[in-house]
Image 1 (cartoon, rainbow, N blue to C red):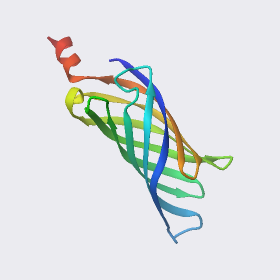
Image 2 (cartoon, rainbow, N blue to C red):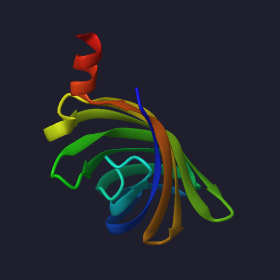
Image 3 (tube, helix red, strand yellow):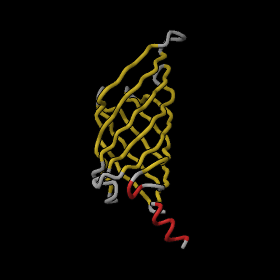
Length: 146
């Protein structure tokens, strides 16, 4: 399987938060983030990223789960899920976790992949992310099996 690494800078396009009154410092947040991928792999470099994340935190620590969609230059799409652990370090919200490719269209139809990521909320509406993992396109898997 080819290795994949990259990064993106994203903007929080919309977000909502609800304070849960069961204990001090508990909040549930929903956010929509958009950005552009940067990678040495030309299949991902320049692709448009969208992700939706649900974060559940108590006093700056908790969990985040969500869905992502990468739209590539030729219109092909790969998408999947992610989950991570949320911490706050020096006032910066950090999420470290893993992702799993679950679907695709065009050249990404039937593709597989997974990896790890780290995101940092660098301002109230900006996210920086680095990620690495592996992937395999269905066409490559079929050729290798053939």
